[in-house]
Image 1 (cartoon, rainbow, N blue to C red):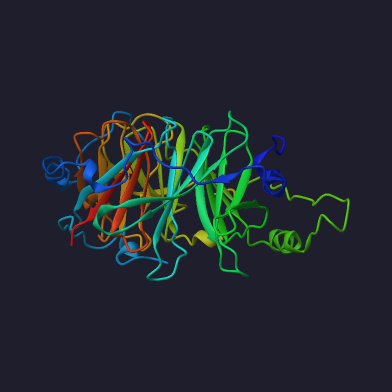
Image 2 (image 1 turned 120 degrees about the horizontal axis):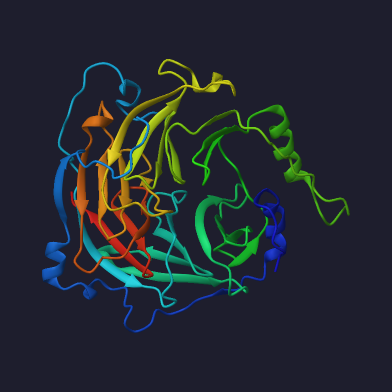
Length: 388
């Protein structure tokens, strides 16, 4: 097993960490993944129970490719419409380790017609599932880290550009990033990084913008593909960037645990019962021209909810960035319609099930937005199918 190290250097160490065995495991008998776990009466109750405007206020105060209407946020006429999305709970199951599931991600890199596959992470376990018709969730693979003290917190999908094999990156408390190939069922070291900007967040209440399209970074990424440890004893020289291209602490007053790009806008949340939509600089400023000395931020709107003031509760968007979903600490799911001209007028649908009462750590939409998966602190997984 690789030694513990800082996260920037952990990618290079992932290849040496191939001691994570791939093993198929069965769910215990009381963790059937068939929809029969949910009785008819409970299924009838487990639908979109509430649809309304974005009116809930948080307990903690905060400082106050583009989808349709995104550029008009913050200017022009405001229009409101009903949330047109509704879901029904069709299945649930529980992983046998009984520990919190911190992350879930559908594989959005699959082709049309391919099975809908998602991964969950929690404890020292990484598990892959496949969604089938009639609400079925089928166990595919389970990977267990050799270190029983490892606790995986997050996962993300990409693919091998040469073989088109899906790749799953996972990371946790040991600070090591592991890359898993589900086709070969091995932990490998190759990875791919797409995009030109990274937005980071942390426990110091700050949000930081990092550009990775500078000449220095482009050359470093290129050299990482050419580096061969079998031909040299010289270690690969990692690039260290000490200062971000933009930084602010004016959005949140507590730990920031989730941030996502929404076109050129940013969605972020803390432990303050609100997701904030904002952008660096002034409304008219080009984000690609923002300077490190910039101190202004423009807040465009908030998506408010309740009972979600604990750390590390992450939201998600669908592939087309038309929907936003977040769970709270008592098992409620909030789904917002992002196809609006003003985020202040966002309509929210609340999803509940009488047996889902644990904190929902993360959600994930399938690429076609037909399925929403939520994972919880009690190791349970909940499948919500969108009603057409």
